[in-house]
Image 1 (tube, rainbow, N blue to C red):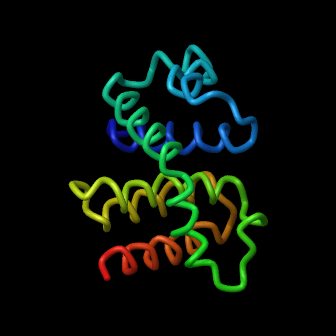
Image 2: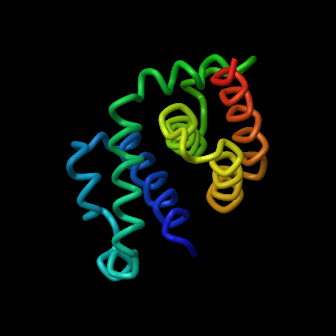
Image 3: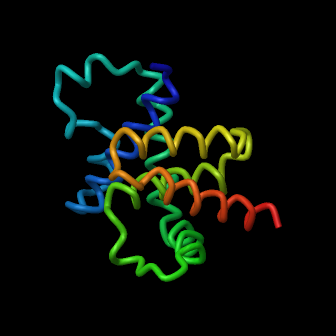
Length: 139
Protein backbone atom coordinates (compact mmCIF):
# COMPACT_ATOMS: atom_id res chain seq x y z
CA UNK A 1 0.00 0.00 0.00
CA UNK A 2 1.36 3.41 -0.97
CA UNK A 3 2.13 6.19 1.50
CA UNK A 4 -0.69 8.40 0.26
CA UNK A 5 -3.24 5.59 0.51
CA UNK A 6 -2.03 4.82 4.04
CA UNK A 7 -2.22 8.52 4.86
CA UNK A 8 -5.79 8.79 3.57
CA UNK A 9 -6.87 5.77 5.60
CA UNK A 10 -5.21 7.18 8.74
CA UNK A 11 -6.88 10.55 8.15
CA UNK A 12 -10.29 8.93 7.63
CA UNK A 13 -9.86 6.89 10.82
CA UNK A 14 -8.74 9.96 12.77
CA UNK A 15 -11.72 11.98 11.55
CA UNK A 16 -14.07 9.16 12.46
CA UNK A 17 -12.57 9.09 15.96
CA UNK A 18 -12.76 12.90 16.13
CA UNK A 19 -16.47 12.84 15.20
CA UNK A 20 -17.31 10.15 17.74
CA UNK A 21 -15.17 11.23 20.73
CA UNK A 22 -14.27 14.91 20.05
CA UNK A 23 -10.63 14.75 21.21
CA UNK A 24 -8.33 17.74 20.81
CA UNK A 25 -6.85 17.96 17.33
CA UNK A 26 -3.30 17.70 18.66
CA UNK A 27 -4.22 14.28 20.06
CA UNK A 28 -5.34 13.16 16.60
CA UNK A 29 -2.05 14.27 15.10
CA UNK A 30 0.01 12.22 17.57
CA UNK A 31 -1.62 8.98 16.37
CA UNK A 32 -1.59 7.62 19.93
CA UNK A 33 -5.07 6.27 19.24
CA UNK A 34 -3.54 3.64 16.93
CA UNK A 35 -2.31 0.30 18.21
CA UNK A 36 1.45 0.81 18.86
CA UNK A 37 2.40 -2.19 16.74
CA UNK A 38 0.33 -0.91 13.82
CA UNK A 39 1.72 2.59 14.31
CA UNK A 40 5.26 1.30 13.85
CA UNK A 41 4.30 -0.18 10.49
CA UNK A 42 3.07 3.16 9.11
CA UNK A 43 5.64 5.07 7.08
CA UNK A 44 6.53 8.56 8.28
CA UNK A 45 5.50 9.99 4.87
CA UNK A 46 2.05 8.45 5.33
CA UNK A 47 1.76 10.04 8.78
CA UNK A 48 2.87 13.40 7.40
CA UNK A 49 0.25 13.26 4.65
CA UNK A 50 -2.40 12.16 7.17
CA UNK A 51 -1.49 15.09 9.46
CA UNK A 52 -1.95 17.50 6.56
CA UNK A 53 -5.37 16.00 5.73
CA UNK A 54 -6.52 15.87 9.37
CA UNK A 55 -5.45 19.40 10.29
CA UNK A 56 -6.83 20.88 7.09
CA UNK A 57 -10.13 19.06 7.37
CA UNK A 58 -10.70 20.01 11.00
CA UNK A 59 -9.72 23.63 10.32
CA UNK A 60 -12.16 23.85 7.40
CA UNK A 61 -14.90 21.50 8.62
CA UNK A 62 -17.69 24.10 8.43
CA UNK A 63 -16.96 24.88 4.77
CA UNK A 64 -16.54 21.18 4.00
CA UNK A 65 -19.84 20.30 5.66
CA UNK A 66 -21.62 23.03 3.68
CA UNK A 67 -20.39 21.46 0.44
CA UNK A 68 -21.51 18.02 1.60
CA UNK A 69 -24.95 19.33 2.64
CA UNK A 70 -25.49 20.87 -0.82
CA UNK A 71 -25.21 17.37 -2.31
CA UNK A 72 -27.62 15.66 0.09
CA UNK A 73 -30.91 15.45 -1.73
CA UNK A 74 -33.53 13.84 0.52
CA UNK A 75 -30.87 13.05 3.13
CA UNK A 76 -30.50 14.50 6.60
CA UNK A 77 -26.87 15.38 7.36
CA UNK A 78 -27.23 14.27 10.98
CA UNK A 79 -28.25 10.78 9.85
CA UNK A 80 -25.20 10.13 7.70
CA UNK A 81 -23.18 7.10 8.71
CA UNK A 82 -20.15 8.37 10.63
CA UNK A 83 -17.81 6.27 8.48
CA UNK A 84 -19.24 7.84 5.31
CA UNK A 85 -19.04 11.31 6.83
CA UNK A 86 -15.37 10.86 7.75
CA UNK A 87 -14.54 9.65 4.23
CA UNK A 88 -16.49 12.54 2.70
CA UNK A 89 -14.88 15.17 4.90
CA UNK A 90 -11.30 14.19 4.18
CA UNK A 91 -12.08 13.83 0.47
CA UNK A 92 -13.95 17.13 0.16
CA UNK A 93 -11.01 18.81 1.90
CA UNK A 94 -8.72 17.36 -0.77
CA UNK A 95 -11.06 18.42 -3.60
CA UNK A 96 -11.35 21.99 -2.32
CA UNK A 97 -7.90 22.68 -0.92
CA UNK A 98 -5.42 20.32 -2.61
CA UNK A 99 -5.61 21.30 -6.25
CA UNK A 100 -2.30 19.55 -6.96
CA UNK A 101 -4.09 16.21 -6.47
CA UNK A 102 -6.35 15.38 -9.43
CA UNK A 103 -10.02 15.19 -8.44
CA UNK A 104 -10.30 11.78 -10.10
CA UNK A 105 -7.57 10.42 -7.81
CA UNK A 106 -9.26 11.81 -4.69
CA UNK A 107 -12.63 10.36 -5.70
CA UNK A 108 -11.20 6.95 -6.69
CA UNK A 109 -9.33 6.70 -3.37
CA UNK A 110 -12.48 7.65 -1.44
CA UNK A 111 -14.50 5.00 -3.29
CA UNK A 112 -11.88 2.35 -2.46
CA UNK A 113 -11.84 3.36 1.21
CA UNK A 114 -15.65 3.33 1.31
CA UNK A 115 -15.68 -0.17 -0.21
CA UNK A 116 -13.24 -1.36 2.44
CA UNK A 117 -14.65 0.36 5.53
CA UNK A 118 -18.19 1.51 4.71
CA UNK A 119 -21.52 -0.18 4.33
CA UNK A 120 -22.69 -2.10 1.29
CA UNK A 121 -23.80 1.02 -0.62
CA UNK A 122 -21.33 3.50 0.89
CA UNK A 123 -19.06 3.61 -2.14
CA UNK A 124 -21.94 4.65 -4.42
CA UNK A 125 -23.10 7.31 -1.99
CA UNK A 126 -19.57 8.67 -1.52
CA UNK A 127 -19.03 8.70 -5.29
CA UNK A 128 -22.24 10.64 -5.90
CA UNK A 129 -21.58 13.26 -3.24
CA UNK A 130 -17.95 13.78 -4.25
CA UNK A 131 -18.82 14.01 -7.94
CA UNK A 132 -21.36 16.71 -7.09
CA UNK A 133 -18.81 18.59 -4.99
CA UNK A 134 -16.24 18.32 -7.79
CA UNK A 135 -18.70 19.68 -10.36
CA UNK A 136 -19.71 22.48 -7.99
CA UNK A 137 -16.10 23.40 -7.28
CA UNK A 138 -15.32 23.54 -11.00
CA UNK A 139 -18.37 25.70 -11.81
